[in-house]
Length: 83
Image 1: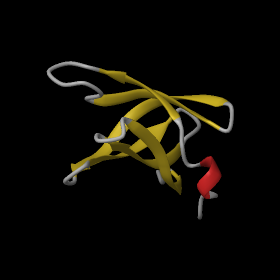
Image 2: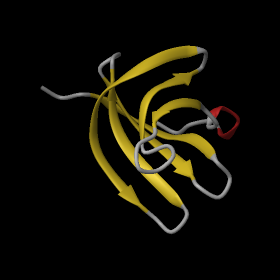
Image 3: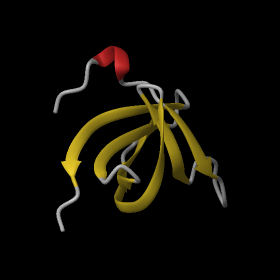
């Protein structure tokens, strides 16, 4: 599902341990606060951290944190979690 670029910026609350914004705890999409149930995968680019997460609405989301801009974006709604 393609995301409208105007809706890509999201607010994310994070756990900060040995580094800032280490992992997302919850995020807000279209005014709806969603809790992170599981981090399915994560990987790191040169400037960005990516998280594939399962939220409490049973959907899988791909979100990105740009370290240089200190900005979170919703990259993709992957779909419903398969059983």
